[in-house]
Length: 253
Image (tube, rainbow, N blue to C red):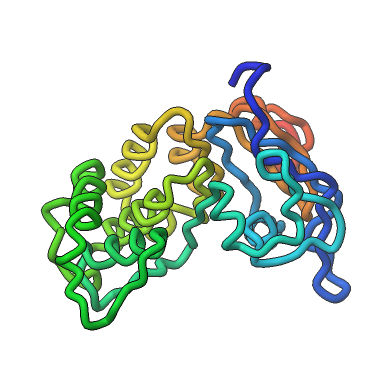
């Protein structure tokens, strides 16, 4: 990203404790418009805690979060969505007994100002059906339009969840381990789709698959014991002495 790129998410000295356990300590970083940033680190090093704080599911013990220049440190998740923030979870969060199109319809309807009457067939909301179909076309899932979500492959369920996140037309899309549980082919498919997203859309994601990170991410933030020890391109952080000491026992020969 260029030096003049707009900062749209900024975390300043974020700390979080659970009892006597320090999950995050004085963590600061920025995300600019259109960035593709991966957050790396082993299990237990605060990645999901950080995501939950950014999304509003947890409040920081100390520090501030600015979203598009506004302090949202104490705001609930739904107000962050209104600011342009969307999130997916490590475990799929879908209506499994409903069809693909019905899941999309409900997501889009939830963003509209009209009430959903249980006695009104959803087919009467033609504009929402058409918009749902446009999303499915765009992400090559239109052939599964009327399929019950429970019957989809896990990879297609993960992709559907990302589509649901896109329904909110976010400016930032946060993905919690998007390749988790996917086969190699499904991971490559998902990475390819993420690469086609609009360049102005910012991606922030937790990930363990380094091939996926190398394909999608432009830069990475590395956490260790709840603090940031490196930030830059994947190649840059691989050469960082702190990263080598923390994860590889010192510089590789």
